[in-house]
Length: 257
Image (cartoon, rainbow, N blue to C red; front, side, top):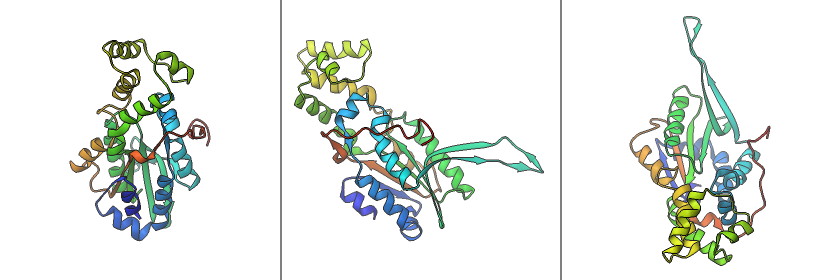
């Protein structure tokens, strides 16, 4: 099943026998996850217009998983020693799938600071140690997506005639700081194309090397963070980017949804 994702360009890595466990004990849940990822798309207009934040980029995926019973959940762990409760600990997980064979926990890290990977993997480690989950999963920007962002954003802007700040306002691109505007203006003054200058600044600010993407996740897992919890790691590929407009998706976690 995971080979379908690999063939579609997704980065996929498993640790501590996670692939065998998924295939044997959780084939239906794995099929749900693979199907949701295969159908997921990221609109370049939405990505740029939303300032690179999560609301437009992951809500469709979150909604698809939520509809398949991959629900947000807060694990509350209480230790009692000689009848005396110790201070409790809670672990909030983006998506939890409960099955008769066990529990799957999944975090989507679209664009956080990269230490969030440590939090996720260490949470999985603790929850697995007390048999609260069977496998921990992380979905993040894949290597090809990370490397393609600047070129794809530049191309989309050029194709849509975005050649000045006025054009950005016309299409409702999210407001930027005066410093960001000045940085783009300096590049243009030196002869750079406006779309290229904007894309360079946008990607550097929003999707820099210190944010959550495949290389940062891979580095932590190879150092053993999260062991011995079985792990499934998935990197979203460039092929999910689309020039087409996609219907807006309400924020799944803004209310009681």
